[in-house]
Length: 624
Image (cartoon, rainbow, N blue to C red; front, side):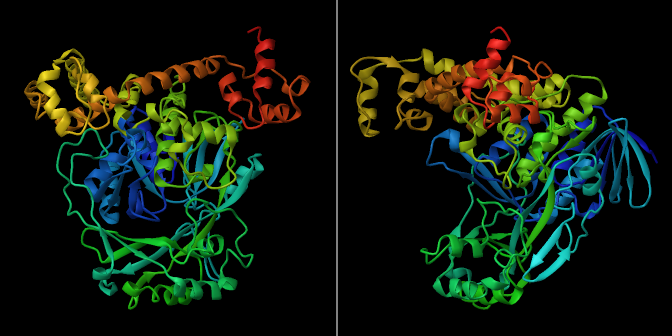
């Protein structure tokens, strides 16, 4: 038994698992502490990974050498690529997973990583010496020493569960809260607050009339989360189901709003605006007579289903009475009611871009402790915190992703510069360089960077290089291959697109919205032959090549814009100014810059309240 480590990670949720795996895989002696080793990477809410913008984050974690995508593919019971009717910048993968198999798969991963050890216990206190974390103490009074500690406590810090007027201390239903750490961090000077999240009722499928619902099957194609996985999905693929609330349901809910913790003053914290409870929906959207609900499976062989869209903290009897007004749920049996949970978080503007805290050296925060919501946002922060904890332990440069490199970079940049006034959820609209941050090119953006710091393995790097080579060669073929009008025009008319007046290159045809590789290969034998020569990952490579050809102009324009903005990120200003003394700055800018202490001028420019004229003042003072 060891008691001294390079890195200790507290909490084995999605952030903690990725943080511990990253640090250990890079060579740090790492300890992962969890309350319950049977609930590693527990999916507290919906057992689903990905979705709008979230799926891109999972692809990025995978490209960096993380495991969320791999485990999701191994345990998927439904996969869908969302937003296929829009451009590829908006395509977002989403997968429903088997909740129990997801936990087992993650535990198998963790238990077989060299340098990584697990300990089941609760942490009650950090050991801080001369402004630096040096270890921690558990409730079993075990003292562990470490050079770095990563806190990924999720909803457990002073967690309080609400079901009607019933209040239960806990981080999840039937799991105790973590007490003591929050108070210690407050005493160290950290600014904290309270947030709320919620989860819906769980339903016994044997009591549901599925024939009265709309079926939503998954996709059955080559798309997956991990770029490493070539194999078919191992688990049985299941459908999700759609139903709707109605005025009778709303009447039941409305009649008991006085018992709702959200409306009787019991809950005072802020919940996620983009994932409202059903009681919030009927209040905020009183003109709507129905709301869409998704009944989603929790496991390959389980009767337990999750009612997405019916998050609630109303009393059990109210939830049950309302559900029974939905025709397909008229005889519903439930496993447990929905509930709300309040928990402590810490203002993320107190963090560096590496996710190390500014107040305590060697202490990192990742996940819901930073005011975020969602497994994907947590896991994305976790892998960056784990990487940087390793880097700090070994005297190496911090690893930071910029806004034009990844959604993870957007997420962390938003947190440390803007802070949060509600649980932060990633959306494609938060990224100004969406065309550069597509789900299909995460490995092209991030795998080499990760390989250079020692996280991405050689196998992953070689697969990426092989894939890039095939994409480049296919694009070159299309750019060089001549198409004569007299040979293709009849086909173009069949495909309902304008005939050619003169010859052109194949790539010019692919630029047309109506045309792609699949449409053209039947009319251009050389293209079909070239496509069939691709040895591996044929569909993935063809899709990537087509996207790059069709959107080349947009991609180049966005890259130019990103490069212009990025110049400000190369100008370091940390420690160079006493902002309170620069009277030519606005009062708000002085306050914000003093509080956040940005590392670069680019970071300063993204702080709300710091105007372009304030940036110009700093440029003048820098002699630029």
